[in-house]
Amino acid sequence: MANGMKIQKTIRCGIIGLTKIKEKLLTEEYENLQKFLHGDKNVKLYSVNKQQALRYYKKIKPNKEYPLSIRKDVIRVEKRNTKITHYWVRIPVAGKRGGIWLPIKPHEDILPEYEICESKVFRNNNRWFIYITVSKYVEVNKVEDRKKIKGYQFGEIRCPVVIAIDIGDKNPITSVELWGHEKKNIQFLGKEIRGIRTKYYWIRKTIGRKKVKHGRKVIKKIGSKESRKVEDILHKITKRIIDRATELKQQGYDPIIVCGDLKYLRKPRKKGEKRSRKLNRIIHSMPTQKITVMLTYKSLWRGINVFIVNEAYTSKTCHKCGSRDTVIKGRYFKCNNCGLEYNRDLNGAINIGNRLFGYMLKSRGRNGPARTPTVDREICGKFQHAMGEHPLFETG
Image (cartoon, rainbow, N blue to C red; front, side, top):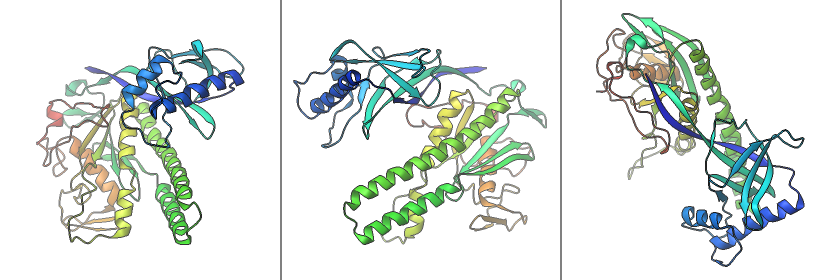
């Protein structure tokens, strides 16, 4: 059975090859928006852009530029066979009837089946960009009937292929495919992120100690560079996982991506409680929310099921016998009950995958309620996929 939903994503586009007239019109519209937001209500601004400004921008900060929000019913995107570019966008401005057509270079193709939604134009270092929001209708197969699951045979039931993901600090993504007792395609992804964060932390610290002139601006610039590098790596590694899930889907399976809920990872500090400054910095700089959001919208965009489950005790519990009498040192995991020696992150990922089926693996054939309930919550307000009531996904 398929469950349909509308999914949105943003396509980043650079505005290129502007003529002097078009650049002048665009600059006037953009700068007049800034004047309008900062109190000058008599500036020449296109009426729809003025309505959007009143709708979106309630609190205005001084010395900050705000993007030009373009309503979906007045923006138009066309594909043309021109030398300069294949894509053109029309946006409304006050100085030109019918708006101006701008050549754009998107980071990926804008397909005809996409619906163009509200988009934003902004300026950065004298370069122009437009972020076009697109949406499409996707169908995600709901796992309601075990006989209809396109997966592997396990005992008397058919099970979907589960790609279990543990999100951490040393290995931002630890991924493993669960095929019954067999574990395939184990990956430790994004190790370089921690090195990038450590490098830029020490650069910022050095600038602070030396009291560099305009140090605050330099630190802000460095932070922006660090963020871009980390985000680039996250996009690449999450795409790698989604590509693998898409490959499984094309082979006739029903892959499910499952990762742990890290909502309560950053606990508020209690009065008098001692904390490691280094550990606190590492935990608070982990890009956990970015990873979860990227995995979610990319999965749903391709029609792949994705679930968030309760991650409590998954790193401390032995995936083989279910015991919590364990020893953890760095990435090393040892169970005192059964003697299992394993990678800590991989053990957590396997437990997250097992928890999806409603049990922590103490008896592989057992299909009872979960010892801790699964989590079904909205992610970033836009991406929500309900698990529904089904024996395969029982909650405790």
